[in-house]
Structure formats: structure tokens, C-alpha cells
Amino acid sequence: MRILVANDDGYLAPGLQALVRACEGLGEIDVFAPEQNASGTSNSLTLNRPLSLYTAANGFRYINGTPSDSVHLALTGLLPVKPDLVVSGINNGANMGDDTVYSGTVAAAMEGYLFGVSAIAFSLTEKGWPHLDEAAAVARRVIQQAIERPPTAGPWLLNVNIPARVGVSRAPWVVTRLGRRHASEPVIAQTNPRGEPIYWIGAAGDAREAGEGTDFHAVAQGHVSITPLQVDLTHHAALPAMRQWASGA
Image 1 (cartoon, rainbow, N blue to C red):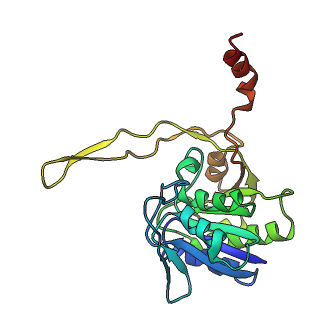
Image 2 (image 1 turned 90 degrees about the vertical axis):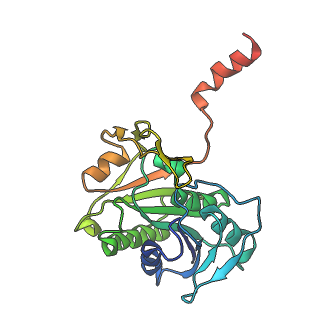
Image 3 (image 1 turned 135 degrees about the horizontal axis):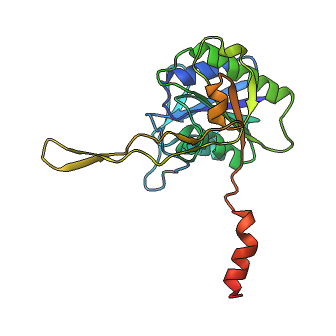
């Protein structure tokens, strides 16, 4: 078993170190991560400049690019053999509902999945990594079970959100669907020291679809949320009507 560990918070992030510790003893571990925090970069690849690879004192390898860059380079030439599993995280904050579209943590796992490698993204639902040791214990259990009893045939992609609370290592696991958020808060306009306008993206909106069965609901109940993801964005239910529309019928 060979495990590739990545994240989006950067190679110095406590969550990455905790996830590596969680994987110890489960297989041979390789770490490829961004040099700096790359939250919110989604699946972006760096195509307008060359990338550089560095090795930290602890053996972690890091790249001056995005989470997807890190996994992509590892899988397309920097690792001697293809890993059996990609794990990403433990993220500093939740990745639920619409967050998954923007998440670099999920994107790093998805990059592995796109190359035919099963993958898991882990997130701790509060900033600052509270109760990180317990979250790492959850991650280890999920990884170990996925190795021993894969959830489905073929490559699979899981998004795991772990509530930041005491006792979460013993919390039940709930298989969920993604919830939905309200639109983001308005843009925040400011002025820089030169008197020029600058803008900050507004905070994420509150949950608007958070009923039973969603990741939001599971976490609110103190449960570990595990959401199976897919990459196919096709709106399959709309295909018949679209075919009629395109034919002019």
C-alpha cells in the first residue's frame, strides 16, 4: 500500500502533519503539498509558469503551486510508482455543500481520482484545528476501513467532514449528500494606502439546504459526514429536453 498525502493549507500546516501521522503504519507515505496556503483554488493547474519542487527537513515535498499541481506532478513523473490511495487534509475548516466546488482540499483528492486513484478529502469543521488529534483518529479509522473494505468497486472519491468537538473520535459516521448554501455575503470594498479601491470576497452564505441527509445536518448533530463525490457535471435529466431544443423540435 502506497499513500500520497496532500493538502491546500501548505506543507507547514498542522492538519497535514496530523494526517501523515494518521497514515503511519498503513503503508508507504509520500507527501506533496503547496508551499503556501492555497485555499479556494479549486482544481486550478499552473500553466503560465514553471513549477519548482522543494524538500523540507522532515521529508515533505512541496511545490510553489496549487493543491492540484502538487498531486498532478506527483502522479505524472515525480513518484516512481502510482499510489494506491490519495488523502488530502486535514483542512482548516469545513468543506460542505457548495464549498466543495471551490475547495483546494477536495481538488487535491479529486486530482488523484481523475488519474484513477481512489481518494479521500478530510476537513475539520472549525478554523484553528481544535481537537485535531481526535480528528486524526477519525481519519485513520476511515482510511483503514477504506483500505480493508473499499466502499465501492473501482476508484472512488470521498469527502469527509469531522465536527470539531471532544469525543468526535467515537462519533458515528453518516453517509450524506451535499447541502446547499445561500449566496455569499456582499463584496467588501476598501481603499489601499495609495487611495485605490480594493475588494475582498465576502464570507460564505449560511446553509439553506441543511435538512436530514445532508452534510450540514450530520455535522450539526455531531456526526462525521462522509459524502461520495463524482466528477461528471452533466445534467442527465435535462438531456432529452435539450436534444429536442437543439433539433428545433
